[in-house]
Each structure stands twice: as structure tokens, then as C-alpha cells.
Length: 321
Ligand SMILES: [Zn+2]
Image (cartoon, rainbow, N blue to C red; front, side, top):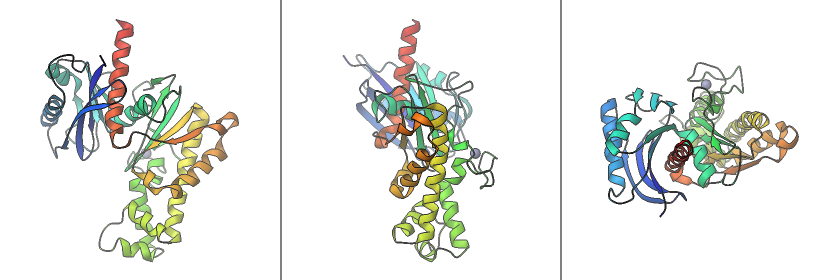
């Protein structure tokens, strides 16, 4: 009989939950819009009721539950410290109420760290020993699998690759620093780049595409694909900066592979070509052979990441018990 866990992925727009087996198969799933401007109690109740609606409760059911969420998480204490998308999530003890309501061990994890472990267990990083995973979306996140285990660091912050500085004189980041990877190459950063191009009058096509509204990263891509060289140069520069960040990390960590997920992958070779070139140009010694792979988990990356964390936690408990 295959073992199963419950997994939840708390995103900015949707709360998703699933029952997942050891091979990464999703056996049942449910989804709801993320409650807007909800209190901590409403959010917690919403998660519990969604998780309840997923799985059959009779028989040999799921053995644990893990919730992946954006933001700062104290995974060992089961507490969400700060979640930018969900104001109700602030110093919120989450796992206690969930464990009590569902009658099984409950865990939380930062979504990018969970994604790293999901990729290692079920996706492009299968069979590897050390993995660096980067989530390239509205923001930039990351996770580390070292010696086949999720690495959390001293305070659970490990893997926050969006806040390594690649351009000290670059744009201001949400974290207060200047020129962080996330401030230079991310969905938000590309929207800034697009705005700047339009303001300087250097991208007439882009201005037409985004007429009457704030430009977004996908407008920059559309303009570049239609031949606007200034737009293409911004994307290629973003890819180069991303490669500088990832290449530096590759030299420190010497992973078997770097895996990538997230919406920015839609920019394709325009972003990824310069990124690969920068990674290779930085590679020190044997790091030049480090593979760069795209996620194989698609839309289920968050759910499978949470499930992977639940299975690792169960295995750790088994080893101790
Ligand atoms: Zn930052």
C-alpha cells in the first residue's frame, strides 16, 4: 500500500490542496481563491476546510500535511513570520491548529525551498545529490538540497537567492538593499525596465503595446519578439545578471545541477541564452560542467514541493523513532 500525504500551496491568487503519494502522483485535488484581506483565523480555517475536502477520511489515509507559502517561515517552529501576499500571515502559529484539526503531524515550508525539494524528489533533480533551485516569477526565490536533504540554514532563511547583490548601483529592492537579483531580473523588475524604456522614449512599439496601462514583463517580451531591440536588450541584460547570480552560487555550492521554474521561463532563450553564457563564463574548474535544467513539475510544483517536505519530515521522524 502506497503512503500518502496532504499538501497545500498558498499562493498570491490561489490556495491549492492535494493528496499526493510517494511517487509524486496527485490522487485528489481542490482549489480556491486566496481569501483577500482575511484575518489569521479566517485564513487558518480556510486551509483546514480545504485540506479536509481533499482526501478520503476512512482507511489508511494521509500520514502528514505540509503547507508551502511565500514569505519568511520558521519551519521548525511551525510559524509564518511574514507573508507578503497575505497580510493575515504575520507571526502566525499555523501548524498547531492544522495538526489538531486534521489529527496528523503538520508542517510548513517556504514555497521556494519546498519547490527545490519537490524538484529533487519528483522532478528534474531526481537522482542527484546536491541541487540549487531558482524560482523565477514576480519575485526571485530559491532553495537548496544538500546531501539529498533540504537545507534551511540557521534561521530558515537559506536559499533566499533573490537578495544577493549583482549590481550595487542598481535599483532599490523591497528588502532595502540596492541591486538585488530580484530588483534587477524578476517580473517586477522587468515591469520597471519597461516603464523606464517608455519614459525615455526608447521603445515606441512597447509604448503602443502597453498603451493606457502600466507595462508588464510580458509587454517587454511582446515588443522584443516583434523586433524592438531596446526591449530585447533589457531581457538579455536580465538574463546576463541572472547568470552572474546563479554562476556565483554554483561556484560556492558546486551542485549537480541548477533547476529553474517560474513564469519568467516564458521569455525563453532571450533570457536563458545570456544566463547560460554568464554561468559558464564564471564557472570555476569542474563547475563548468554544471547542468541547468527546467522544472518538470509544471503547475503542480508547489503542491509536489509541499508533499516532498511532508515525506522528508516523516522519514526524519521514523529515523528518530
Ligand atoms: Zn533585496
